[in-house]
Image (cartoon, rainbow, N blue to C red; front, side, top):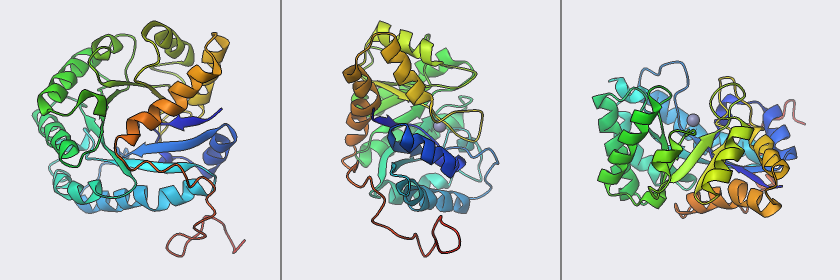
Length: 284
Ligand SMILES: [Zn+2]
């Protein structure tokens, strides 16, 4: 089984995770730029973070046979902090880089006027740079947030098939289904979607334009819940080809719209070091 996790924050994970993922068939990931928990106080923190998502992290992933791409944006939560807003002016130079396959994650956290402005400006950047957009929906007041998200996406002029609306559930899929946008679901150990709930949604709405991710990060999360959901699909009577569509072909189809997805380098043998550093210790 081949799995492409279209939304996972590997910066927050260990090499054990990479090893278990590769052994489970998770051979490709996209890491969206997001909030790191600790508030950042200046744009320089973001440039170092973005550089790491495009340099060190793909190198680290490659050591385990996992192909890593990123999406770049000012996340919705930090869009509210005046100290971070200048990051919007730094984005154009990042959006031209090779391993950037979308603008994201953008969207709403608390639905403030500052978030409206950052969301609209970054959708415009996606259009300008000919990139898809990965859109986070709020964890509170989700239905209203998803409705508002779809309105802003429609008004932006971006083609709906170039937009993934993420972190959906049984309620908000009703709003996104039929919009032309891709529907993303994050499977978590305790809250939000579980593998059985995800399988029920796939039964009801079909497999087209569906993306399933672990969204694993620094919180309670599990990078192998993609595999658990794939196995739950098979147990429910879906075929191997259905699993391949949801967990491999769909994310490839979505991110290929960037023209930058490169899945050829899977072995990690190409780069022995990254800027003189290696993840191995003591010159192994
Ligand atoms: Zn995320």
